[in-house]
Amino acid sequence: MAWVVLVVSGVLETVWAAALSRSEAFTRWVPSLVFAVAIVLSMIGLAYALREIPVGTGYAVWVGIGAVGTALYGMVVLGEPVTAARLLCLVAIVGGVVGLKFLH
Image 1 (cartoon, rainbow, N blue to C red):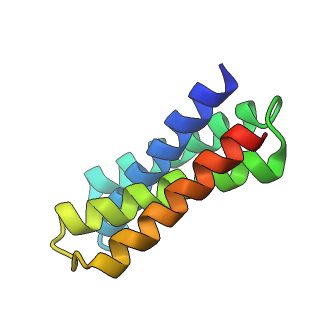
Image 2 (image 1 turned 90 degrees about the vertical axis):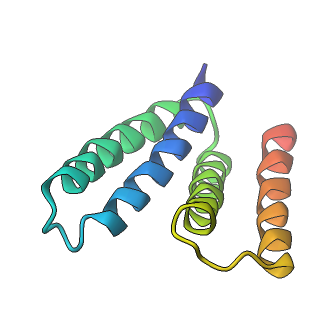
């Protein structure tokens, strides 16, 4: 169960990062609220998961999911550049996260 919560918390990290960019420095009410709720739930989930998963592994997986998700959001939704180098780097992050999960 801790791994499921950790993955959901990592996805919520992507949500709060996207909402933060849309909040325009907290001047837009709805994205600011989404940011606040998502970051609190993400941290609660991370804290819960770290009761069973070592902190180094759990934090790296959480950050990796959030980083990859946010980068993909930027490319797909915000029109950020999609290059072979960027995609290769994202694959490397995913490989590291999967490795940490299975070497845990």
